[in-house]
Image (cartoon, rainbow, N blue to C red; front, top):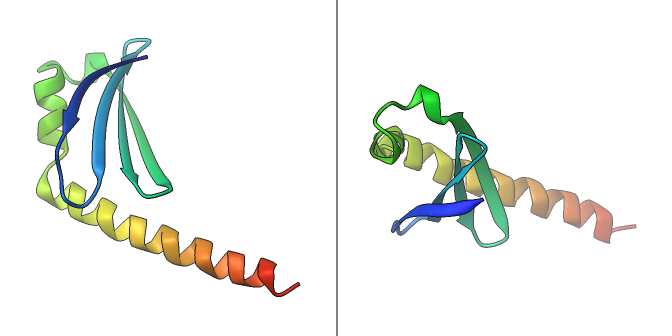
Length: 83
């Protein structure tokens, strides 16, 4: 797996990898990650097409998902910690 691009963004770190004829889009915020895979054949514009997929609306909902992930994890940890 090799890194082919990184997108600067204030809400999360975005890395794009290439592996086994797939683009792997990895979003990271703190200890949480979201990973999306798409076949290179489905994006004829190459990595530029991947950039288009990562539009403002996608990033906004991904950031909201990170908040939900954090909330879910904190709730689960509180239950664990109460045993």
